[in-house]
Image: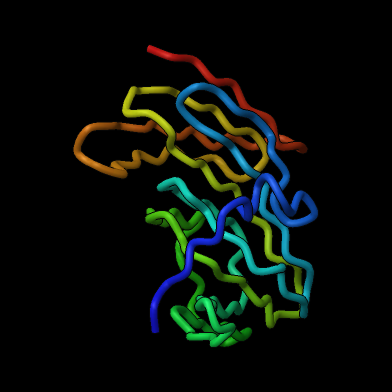
Length: 162
């Protein structure tokens, strides 16, 4: 199985129904990720390293798709009401992703915020709308991100270069 990187199929650029661009600067993109209950997104790529935050995990399956259309499961979780609930929000450091799609196998919508990292410079981002949290993320040794999650009724952000 060989990962496939087709041109022009970045999720944020091509599929706004699942990847809504909230903010873009020289150093990052902030993307609101949505996959409805019991549905899947269209195959796409993510060409930048990122950090993914989710406050309400759901049962998902991630499949890579190769040039011939063959699929390979690369991640799968099965959450049920009896599963231990992880501390939230969950933050996952992610490398660029080749052609893939995510299936939400849960009865509830999958919601996340993906921060795609373009440049190696420090930037502070303040989120409102998830939970009271402060998360320090170290995507690589050249960059430090301070993520502040504050309670509020809607998601918003401020971006300040230091």
